[in-house]
Length: 268
Image 1 (cartoon, rainbow, N blue to C red):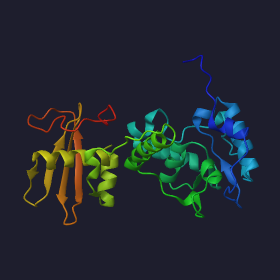
Image 2 (cartoon, helix red, strand yellow):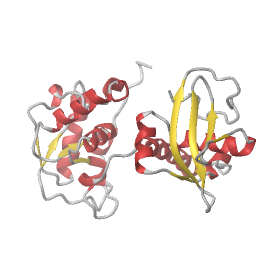
Image 3 (spheres, rainbow, N blue to C red):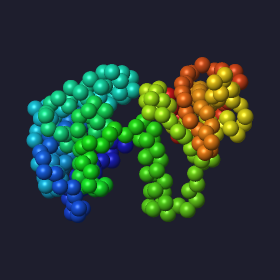
Image 4 (cartoon, rainbow, N blue to C red):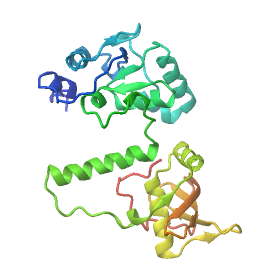
């Protein structure tokens, strides 16, 4: 509610001892403020103080602070108009020839997709190995969702001490998704988890169609969107995904609600 004051992670870190083992950066970075911090000077100041204490050298691009503009994700621009979002990220990346120092996960991902090296401040404070985090590829559409699910399960086990955490049946499905198909699914906003649900439903119910080329086609309608998956079983028990698409038409006879959508939505 409006009466509850929110405190950012960066303000908390500013007032605590920083973790030992922070990544040492020899080169200078350029701070790229997210558009959501344009009206939050206390957050911007905290980020700069934390970065300085961690030994990070940085410069200010011409359009930073309250004059920063969107990386291409804000307002779901990346979903509504991917071409414009890519242009926004590219334009923002051209503000400086230096690698960016960011503190927004979506900024980091959009810049990586646009080919702009960017380092998230948390990757400096809590490094994973010795690799340069600026060169890491963008996190894929499905991987983002799977990371969130993994984090929630880890917190349930470690923080809330829940012991009855079990995987859902469809999670046993092992997928092999070629890179070109993975890009197609991401562009069409189809999660790998949805693909697993569709295949699991088809294999359990037998409701699937066989094409002339031997591939199988299955459908899943968890809510208002019908998903279709073209796949083929492999000898090792996994399934190769060859294509996927979706629509909002109701197709009589399509497999409906055989696997409830745990997220509460339909992914559209």
